[in-house]
Image (cartoon, rainbow, N blue to C red; front, top):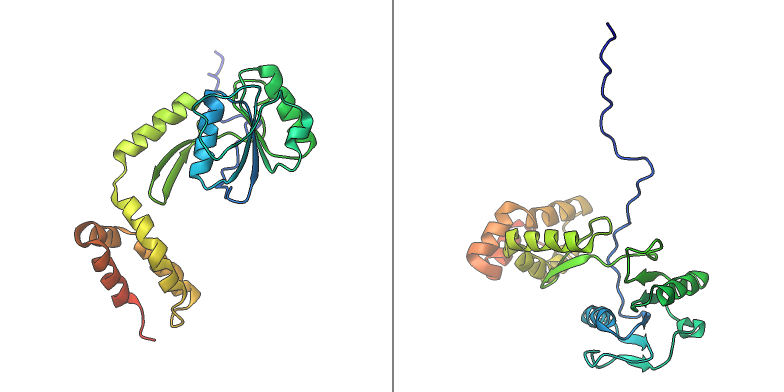
Length: 224
C-alpha cells in the first residue's frame, strides 16, 4: 500500500509582488492629466483636494464638470505635452492613447498612472480607494480590483471610531509641544507619542475633549 502523499502547505507564489504604498505631497508637483472626460475630472478634483496647484489637462474636448483652476490644452495628445511634468495620469477612454502616454512618460522617467488599469501595462502606480476624515487618511488597495478596494474602504469607514480622526487633529498641536520639551529624551518622546495613540488617551479625548487631553499630557510632561 502506497503511503499517502503529504499535502504541501498553501504558499503564495514567489513571483507575486506588491506595490509600495506611499503618501505623496503634490503641492509643488507639475501634473499632466491626459483626458477630459469623467475619469479625468475625478482625478483633477482629488488632486486639487490634495493641494495640487499646477495641473494641466490635455484633450481635444473637455467635460463641463472639469473643475476651475485647471490649465486646459485643447489638443490631441503629443509627446511634448509631458515636457517638465513630474506626475502623469493617462485618463482617456482610448487604450491606444493611454498606452502612448505611458510609453512616453516612462521614456522621460516620469511616474504615470493609467486609468484603464485592467490593461496589460497599468502604469507605474495605482490610486487607492481613500477614506478621509480631517487629517486622517486611510487608503485601500486590493491588487488591482478598484471595486473590492472601495468595498473594503466603505466597511472600514462604517467600523471606524470617529475619535481616531479627532486624535489625529489633536496631535497636530500636541506633537510640537512634545518635540520641543527639552526635559524629554528621544526615548521618552517616543513613549509619550505611543501613549497618545493608546486607549487611555483616546478615552480621555472621547469623554473630556481636547482640554482634558491637554491636561492629561501636561501631567506627563516633566517640569522644565
